[in-house]
Length: 352
Image (cartoon, rainbow, N blue to C red):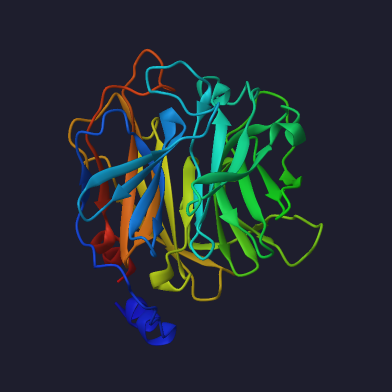
């Protein structure tokens, strides 16, 4: 309780709220093969943009009416859930001020091979929501030369640039505002077998935080030290030994002092959201616990993973991805009902 009160007193948070409040789970029914994974909130349009991962599209969702409004497609990459393709759309980012949506189109070869095959073209696309047109498209594989991949998520940088994290092995690419791609950090070796590396990114001021899964640690990079990308471990006062962390988020409601990580470990039967806080600007982190997501959804598929967790209108929502195509888990199954789960009270309970 003290931690929550301290946040409220110190934050001075008084951002104008244009959208109506939200509370409770958000259900989307009769949306065949949508499979929303990563998602972002548009506070100007009061809409959710969700990556329809198996179709390589973006779903435009109205959370108040629980409706699918539009599907954003990317020519030559998007496809139907029944069409065999190696293209999937995981990470998604939104610059609300400029109405620019940025997405990753990944090659899925890494998924079925545990990172041994990272071939295929991977793209980052910027899309203008006002003009409904593509602003830019860059091929990450021109830089990686197929030596590393499994790109999952996007995080805005300090200079109108963006960072993209790769999973096999751990890597981070920087894309400048003029679409020049450069390796920011690449772990060695890049040859197979490749270990699952960085699952997500979150920026706190000049610090870029990621989850170093092979070493079971939170690490940070100082973006202020140009051309020197050195991961520094963030000591945990209460240690959480994770190995399958994905998305990392710093919800605005906690002023960047609470870090949420989605994680799924089939071997350990773990699917949930882990919670850390800091009292010293991420010099150290205190682990508070894991919010178990295994019982949050009815009718489990043969496999699921907790994919993303985001703040929407001061509430914390999480998404679960179902792998119910048993023939090819990289393709959509036959599911039509999906949900974003409101876990706000569970997060706050851990922080008391």
